[in-house]
Image 1 (cartoon, rainbow, N blue to C red):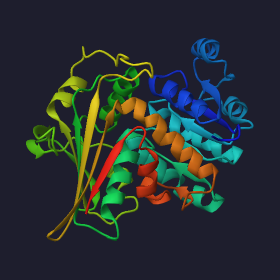
Image 2 (cartoon, one colour; image 1 turned 90 degrees about the vertical axis):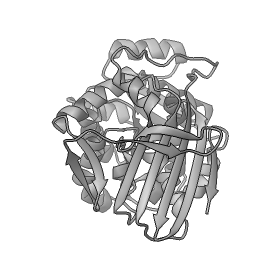
Image 3 (cartoon, rainbow, N blue to C red; image 1 turned 45 degrees about the horizontal axis):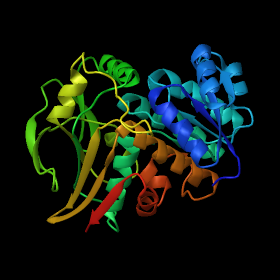
Image 4 (cartoon, one colour; image 1 turned 180 degrees about the vertical axis):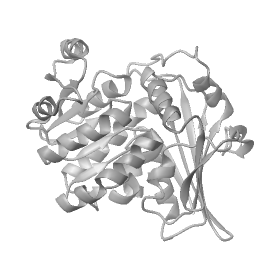
Length: 342
């Protein structure tokens, strides 16, 4: 348990934000609820009893007041193309760590491009994509690499049995599609590239009991930003089970519905990571429930480690670079099971 440190949560009333607030409180932090919608903040304060401070991303003074006295800030409010920059600026002014749960590829690229030098010079910590997509895949890939300093390929296959997207996921996806002009994106040849063609449908041999499943072969997620930011891997490819891809593409798929007292949905996941160097292959496999709910222990564990000095770098850094990946994954054992297969 932490000793009552205050952590501001921007977008606290959103679906993921609520999980993050609950996880912070469970671990002994004092959440400060902040975001753009004063009425939603008021309602959440009534439910939880935590202090609320409304702030808009176009009002730097309000953001400064929202972060006053906080030890760190977690940004859960998408689209991150709109919110990340202003909240990072406020965190830099306050001299506190910034972490977000952005799955938007372009927003994460922007964070590395625009803030790397300033954060490094200031000795600041900025961790983008500290979530299921981006951070978790990076931790698994880094752990699978082990003592390898480079690899030829990294493959991250997401075996989701379903995907009921939140309003935030739909909004962020629309912004990303608009920014890339409807094209899709891949990481190949050591750089991000845009493609006009449709992604391939392949078969991926997931570990038992899931087994072989049809996947979208280049369903690109934020891992193509986080993994290459610190690992020498020129080919990073991500895959998604067809059922989940169809769910998120359908405009009438409902939002997640709680099935337990933690508020988790019935969604389950299996993440299968394979890294290859020449003829050698290493693997990491993770299993759990509800990609939105599991983001909370991911980002709160990260905050805890940054605030207690259990981090290895400053600047704009991904999860696999700033943390001891195997140790971090072990710490998630109440929420996720992980198996490393050298």
